[in-house]
Length: 278
Length: 309
Image 1 (cartoon, chains in turn brown, yellow):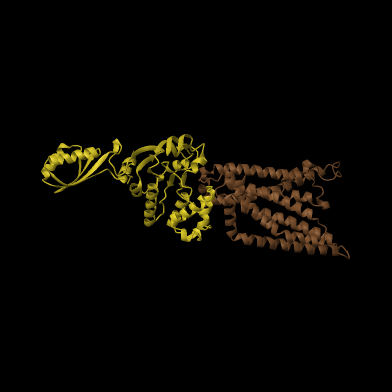
Image 2 (spheres, chains in turn cyan, blue):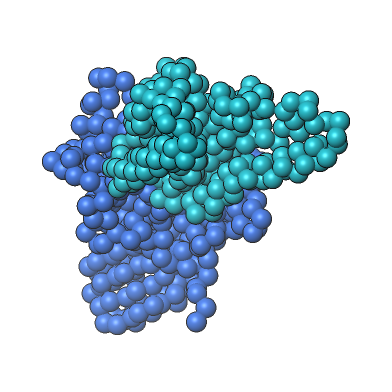
C-alpha cells in the first residue's frame, strides 16, 4: 500500500504537468470564466427581482443563484478539461517512446496507472479548490449552507475521478493522444447529452399518461438514464424546488464509482499488455 | 545467464520467432545479427519481459521470463531501438525517477545516482534539461539509466542507431568496459564492424530461426562456412609455390605475384598450419604468414546471401 503513496510516478507526473504552459494558463482562464459567470448571475438575479417589483432585493435568492450558477458552470468547465489531463496521459508515453522504460522497470501497471490518475485528478482538484472562494461568495448573501458546498464539491470530485478513469482507459487503448482525447470527449458528451435526451423522451412518454402526472417527480425507471449524467448528482442535492424531483443521487454516485472502477481495471489490464504495442 | 529454447512468437504480419534458441554465459558479449524482420527486436523484447511468447522457454539467471517478470527486470537492463527520454525533465530528476522506479533504497539509491551521472559524464549538468543534450549524450544518459540498478545482463537493441562516429566509438568503449566489469551483454546491431570489434560471439538469426553461430576473429567457424584466408610474403621462386599449390587442390588463389601470395583454404587453424608446413617443406622462406578467418561482413554475406543488384 505504501508503494501507492510513495509512488515515484506521482512526483514525475506532477513535475512535468506543472512545467507545462497550460499549468498556469488553464487555471487563469478557468477562474476568469467562473468569475464572469458569477458576476453575470449576480446582475441577472438582482435585475430579475427588481423587475418583479420587489422593493428590497432578497440576499438569499441572490446567494442561491450565484451558488447554483457557479456549481454548474464549474462542473461543465471541469468536464471539458478532464479529458485533456487524463486521455493523453498514457498515449504521451507511447508517443515519446518512454513507456518501454516504465514497463521494464519495477513499477507495476497499477502503480503506473495510479500515478497518472492521481496527477490528473490533483490538477482538477487544484482548479476546484481555486474556485472555492468564488463559491463562498454566496455565503455572504445567505441562502446556501456550507454543507451544500461540501456535498456539491464531493459529488463533483467523484464524477471527475470517474471521467479521469475513463480518460485513462482511452489512453491505454489508443496509440495517439488525439484519438484517445477525441473518444474521451465523445464519451463525456454521450453521458451529458444523450442521457438527457433519452430522459426527455422517457419523461414525455411518462407524462402523456394522465394518471401518472401529479404523483410528484418521474419514477426511478424514467430517471435511470440520468443516473449516468455527470450533472445528476448535483441536481438531486440542491435545495431548489426545481431539482427536488431528482431524488436518487446515491444510485448515480454508485454508478459513477462502478464505471470508474471498471475503467481503471480495464486500463491497468491494457497497460500490462501494452508492451506488445511498442 | 540466458537460456532460450525453441522460442516461437507469431504476429498477424507473419514475422516473429520460429523456434529460436540461444544460450548466453555470464562472461559473454554476444552480437545478434540478421536482416530486417529477422526477429531480433522480438527476441529482445521477449527477454525484456515486454512481450509474451507463443511457446518455448526463456530463462534469465534462473528466472522464467514469463512467470517471474519482476525478478527478471531487476537483473536486466534494456535499451530499446528507439528509446525515449522525458525531454522536460532535468537530467538529475530523470536519473532519480528511475532510481525510485527500480526501488533503490538509501544509501544504494544515492550511490547509484552519483555513479550514473559520473558514468554518463553528466555530473556537472545534472540541473540541465534533457532536451538540451545532443543525441550522443542522450544515448549516454540512457545507458546510465539502464545500468542504475546494476543489472547482470544488458539487452541492447540497435544502440548505435543515429549516433555520429565519435559517439559510436564512445559507446563501443563503454560496452567493452561494462563487459570487462562482468556484465553479460546481448546486442543487436546492423553495424557489423562495431560488433566485430566488441563481441565475443556472434549469433545469426533469420526468419526467427538460428542461422549460424561463429566466433569473430577466429577460425573456429561452422563447418559449412569455415574458410581461412592466408596472406603470405616469401622469398623463393614462384615455381616452388606453384608446386605446393598443385599439391593443395582445395586452395583458392586470390592473388599471386613475386614474393606475395594470397590464398583461401577450406578449414581453419589446422589447415592453415598444414599449408605453412608445405611451403616450408618446399624450401620456401616464409617472411610473413597471416591467416585469418573471414570477417563478419563476409560471414554475413555468406549466411544471408549477397544483395541483389
